[in-house]
Amino acid sequence: MEIKAPIRLTTISEFHKFWELPKPENPLLSVIDYRDINHSLSQPEQPVILDFYSITIKRDLGVKMIYGQQSFDFDEGIMFFMAPNQVFRIEKEKRNITDHSGWILLVHPDFLWNTFLSKNIKKYDFFQYSMHEALFLSEKEEDIVVNIIKNIQQEYHSNIDNFSQNIIISQLETLLNYSERFYQRQFITRKINNHRLLEKMEDFLIVYFKNDNLVKKGLPTVKLIAQELNVSPSYLSGLLKHLTGKSTQQHIQDKIIEHAKEKLSTTELSVAEIAYELGFEHPQSFNKLFKIKTKLSPLEFRASFN
Image (cartoon, rainbow, N blue to C red; front, side, top):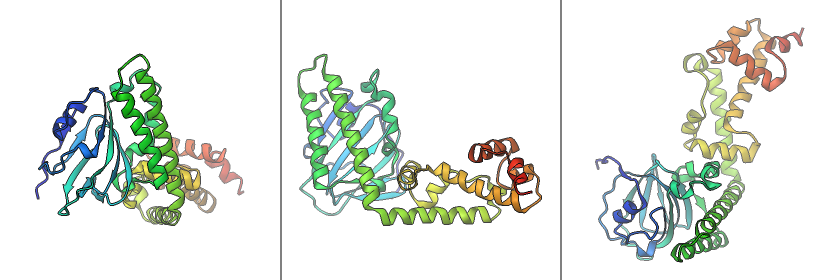
């Protein structure tokens, strides 16, 4: 099947129109109950781009979500997050699912303007996670999430006053903080799989540094490693932070320093030559990183072996 060009929904009102829902009461915020969506609609199976934040909790809907190169079935209660400008696609299943349940919370960036969340929302890395890195909720966790969304819905439907936005913003921050906690729990409960991912990363870096990739391709990037492991860069860094206390970039740097120390202590190559072999375009960049990591310059480190 030919994939059509993405549909860009720039406003929450356009999202409502796309799914043939009533107009939102607030153009910058919407709480949608999946039971209100007509799932018999023959929507085009084409990519969609949203210009606003989307927080979704779903249970078996008889659809697949295509996000990047991954597809995901919603047979369990899961939660996922999308920031503006992310692309996803919906594929209908042949199964006849009648018990649709779930919620969608849509928040336009303008709703956050001049609030503490306008910048702080970017600290929640899970908005950049891929679909297959969704949050699997326990029954208790799902109750907490749904109750917060219902609180936002209640405030959303109430008469707007001077307190409305602050109350909703506060509830939204609570929802995001709980979500972050639940993701940390998921990192723990999936410990075996997560450690396998860490082992795969280490194996990839070992092979990458052993070959001539550093000279030919330069230093490995976080994006490259994430692609090799089939995860998003944000998810990988979040997972590594939990497992090791270090980000992906810090792991790459540690591997660089490890090889640099070996070359400085076992070869007579100049610092510039070592920097080149490790993928640095400029020796100054290598010198700076080495001193940050070891508190010594490369020459000082080499001198310590003489």
